[in-house]
Image: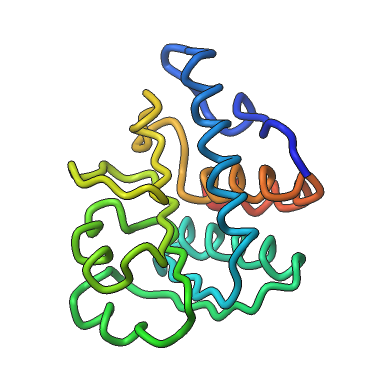
Length: 171
């Protein structure tokens, strides 16, 4: 279940950098390995087209592995929203948002959350935060949340390549 995701298909680099692509691939592998070892996930995603498709990609990848999941679309990760979603699972995957709320998420969920996002991150570290800006990729112009979700899903299991059309819709 290993394999490098086809980064060049989903990332339009303004300045290609093979070293950064390799680092992103390694981080995707690490992310997938930790997710594979856990179960009982709440997939929380943005409620726009990008977020819905990104959430669907992650949910389908986890379902195919027999993981227990619940999904919820929300407008934004407000304090009230975080209160609403507590208890939906043991682990949380935030898709198409979360990079700007890492401090709050760490406070509420400890190490039991993952973030797959393409928006500008804040300067807070979390070991399960995957954002293209950390790899020299402009998440505002070069990849969508659905693109990030697809890269995760394809790394998680190369057979998830059938989810590519969803990533394109989300872009």
